Image 1 (cartoon, rainbow, N blue to C red):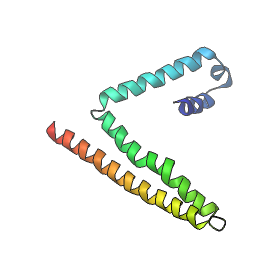
Image 2 (cartoon, rainbow, N blue to C red):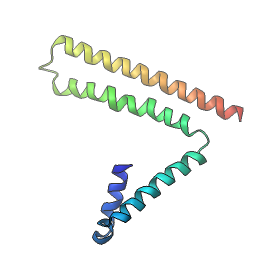
Image 3 (tube, rainbow, N blue to C red):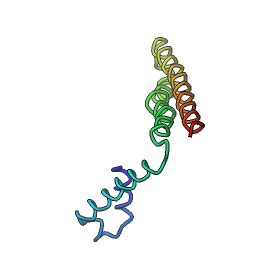
Length: 113
């Protein structure tokens, strides 16, 4: 929420964005809108699980290993390359299984309603 709130505050005129009460009001509105979105979206938890299993695995596990391989490919030892490739493979498998599990839960809940 903080990056979104800061981005919105930067778009405002200087006088309004410096007010403390306006910052509190903006952040409160963002939290309330998120809660309303969670109540209105029928399978919010399942959608968040899908996003987490797909995007978070890539950003936290796969991308750092691939970046290491790209940056230090000539300086890395064989063990480091092997471990990085193993992490990427396990990350892809985990992302696939998590995404499959999340989609199957969404489908099973959607078909039962």
